[in-house]
Structures are given as structure tokens and as C-alpha cells.
Image (tube, rainbow, N blue to C red; front, side):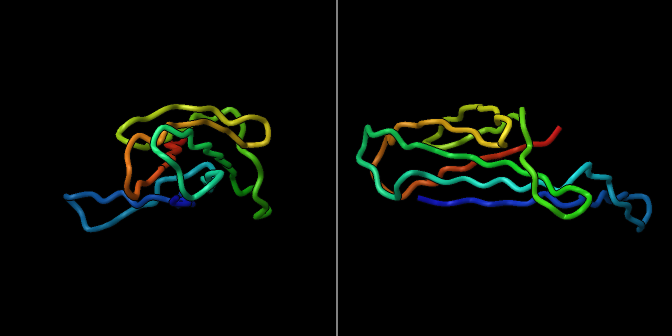
Length: 110
């Protein structure tokens, strides 16, 4: 099973009329981690997916990000879950087909 971890960094915005760029402010840097309970499943079995969403505070310490919506994608389906006070969320998706598949989580921000 694929384990995904991503970090959100400031985004640059480009203007076509000029050659300058500017940074769009990001409230905080975030980190989204995804893990599964196993790396192999039989068709029809539940895949247990654990999510951890964190932000980096002004001191550089990673802290849980609570009450945020995370989309989880697998097997051409998606589900939305919300993080708890510890920044964690959990869901289950059925393994629908044989082969190598990717489970993806997305936090789009506020």
C-alpha cells in the first residue's frame, strides 16, 4: 500500500503582464500523513486508513490540526472525513479490484 506524506509550502503567483512574482501568504505549513493497517488485501476486504494532519507553529513544532476536512481517494471513489482533536481521522474503504492501487489523501486548506 502506498504511504503518502505531503507538505504545503507558500505558493507563487505569476502575472502575465509583468515579469515579477509575489508570495501568497500561507497561514501555516501543514503536513498530511496516511497509513494503512496492512500492505496486502483480498478483494472485498476493508482497508483501514489512518490520517494525521498537523501544522507547524511559530516555534517550528508540529501540532495537530483539528476539525479539518480531508478527502480520501481509492478505487475511483472518494470519501470525506474530519480530523479529531489529535489531528487524526480514520476511515475504511473496500478493496474492489486486484492489482497495485494507490490510496490518496488531500487536505485543501481553509
